[in-house]
Length: 432
Image 1 (cartoon, one colour):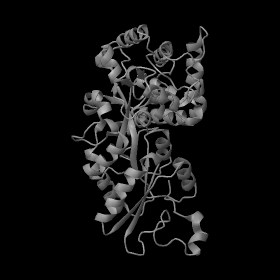
Image 2 (cartoon, rainbow, N blue to C red; image 1 turned 135 degrees about the horizontal axis):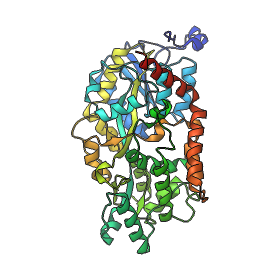
Image 3 (spheres, one colour; image 1 turned 60 degrees about the vertical axis):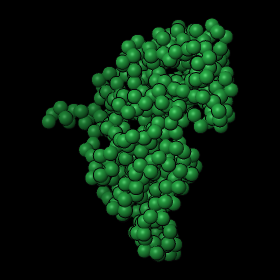
């Protein structure tokens, strides 16, 4: 792709002399004070306080670079609009999901293989980014920074009081749910009114039952979702027996509040919910465990994905300064500031404290027994979360068959171009 010119759409503004000191996204290499300006746009407004601390300390310790980190609401919409206008920041901080795949496919990111900090990132999280490529590319285009973990949150005090043990297999899990129910307590709570929450148990189950590169296998014509997702779907549906009667009557915030107040013993959700739960009950003693989707405990995998990673834009005019920013971001002290604020999992190698609520997942985290969220590969237009919600509420005898057929049909509908691209790539490699 030809190198794009930044700020063509801003020509009038430039003519009026408005791209001056401190303004970014216009290709300015220097501010009036002589410092190189580096702009980072982050998609996580909830992390703004942590980034403010990092930004402040960076600027206090660097005489030649000025760092500006913005975390606007609707950041992805803002970024897409800026990209259309060819008004690029220097670095973007995004999640490892389909947006990353699309931006990478559009050739927007710089290969950062020569950044020394990349060598300090755990292989598992680097591999996740490679699996997000529609077709394999040489190089590294993102610096994984912080991950989350999803499985089952549980009320530790309640478990201790009743003598319940952490399950390690699917049968142990369902037996535990039966036991909890027999003691007059609701095992699980759902917030399926917000359709995205249906993906929490879906992903946590799927990582242990399906290959992490399943979507690529489907796109290349080697398999179908119907051949791989049936057990995932059936096991998520089996969970409904252990929740409230109408799982779609309550949303995410309702479910967090209910769990915080002791309405259920467990909550199938990710670590991102901990802060919301603790905002209701700051003293709640929360634990977590990997979703035991298999009958063989050794085959269980922790659902953990890149929640935040940094990408240098290909049109960045100050690559050396951008690298200095990323190197600073990956220093232990900077990471600790972020982890403490967000209860996140570090992507960097090293001896970092794991937030207490995730202590029981430590072995999986430290040994890389992790796999990315399956939905990070789904196009948003496909609305897989709504499809799952519809399936869960379908009591017909052929509900699973219907859902599986629909999944494969909708996948082709919304991924036709990508499927064609992958098949062409595979055919080209076969002829080499």
